[in-house]
Amino acid sequence: MTELAGFTVGVTADRRRDELAALLERRGARVVIAPALRIVPLHDDSQLREATRRCLDTPPDIVVANTGIGMRGWLEAAEGWGLADPLRTVLAEAYIVARGPKARGAVRAAGLHDQWSPDSESCDECLAHLLRRGVGGQTVAVQLHGDQQPEFCAALRAAGAEVIEVPVYRWAPPLDSAPLHRLVDLVSNRLVDAITFTSAPAVGALLAAAGPGGDAVLEALRGDVIAACVGPVTAAPLIRHGIPVIAPARARLGAMVRAIADELPRRAVTLQVAEHQLTLRGHAAMVDGELRPLAPAPMAVLRALAAMPGKVRSRASLLPALPRGADEHAVEMAVARLRAGLGDPAFVQTVVKRGYRLPVD
Image (cartoon, rainbow, N blue to C red):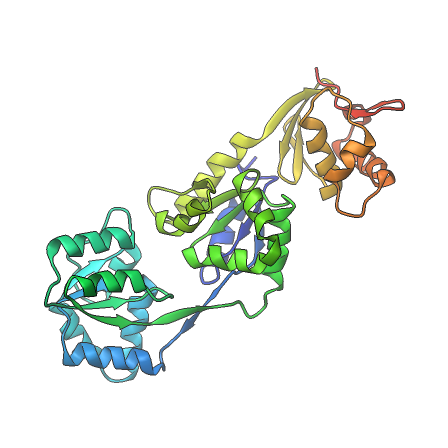
């Protein structure tokens, strides 16, 4: 059986969502796609053209390449304006700092050479390197990565540099926000086991979509729902909220998926119940190695019973595990569906006038 069978993973990426979803599904996961943001190219934007003209008029001594898509987009836009060759000539003379492997790949694909790249792929390390090297009296072109970078650029200016900000694309809300709001509800109700982030702004977009329910999302991410990030830059806003994250050593989608595939099965609860091995996996239970998907209500009851194995749980105490508005009759129906889903009524024992229990061995 594949590692993520029975688990549900939310995907907040837009541009590479299909690739990420395919990697997760290949390992057996159920995937919920809900882009938190979309990238809006600025090929025809006057600000990008003006920044390009400034680079040609005042060739930068240093160029900070933040993202692969940004560097490619900049050169493609210059091509459309008939400025690609002059821009490449100017960039070839500059000291190029590539923030990560994607930016480095885009630089080299353009026939340029990068001189330095940080191990952490972080803007902070890039800034520290440039300040150590010295930027006083030099012109620094900073290819922005979706948002303005006021602190980064201000620090360079304070050190005596002239900064040219190059905005190649910007973040915008998704055209259809319904999937993101649905993902917010799934996270709040612990109906996804992990949620993936491939950009730091996506974290803020998710919390903004949650609105007043943001605290419930944060609480879920601090406990039951894994926050998986493609790298440390993406993880930073989650860490500031006190959320534990998993992130691979190298910022790659495949590495992030492997980290999820390692972590989720480790969290699965396994019990010996009614002479069977029972493992709880996200939206499914494994009975003696056979995966049995369950609907949310019976799965919620199973989790509540498994939290106190062998102990009797009253209908009233199980009620909060079900969706809002449910009553004790709904608990009875969920228990009946749970027994049917597990394939043996002996998994859930009725204790007359008291409630239900898992008869653990």
